[in-house]
Length: 134
Image (cartoon, rainbow, N blue to C red; front, top):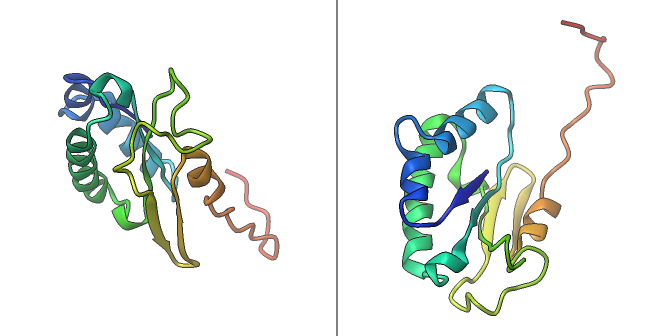
């Protein structure tokens, strides 16, 4: 789930009719079990730690209501335009200590978006069960 950190953009996305809210709800409804929240455009907020924490708090409350467990969701501040914190650690956010997530298979942690993607657990394939077609 990509969230824009810009002033007004996050508020529009998380509002009652916002697309961020709609996308999270659709993902859960369609059976998505694992989620990564990338908070984009952090460069426009001058990599504000307060803005990041505000977005994490509001988004955590919302995704909990949808059905996701916020403890199993990594929140990663990124700048897609500059490529910051996507593959390598960004020097622009020394306050960011990384993300931790707890799942049934254990704990994992990392700092970048790539680390979060690598920590996604592959879904189980019920190959011992009969074939089902809709």
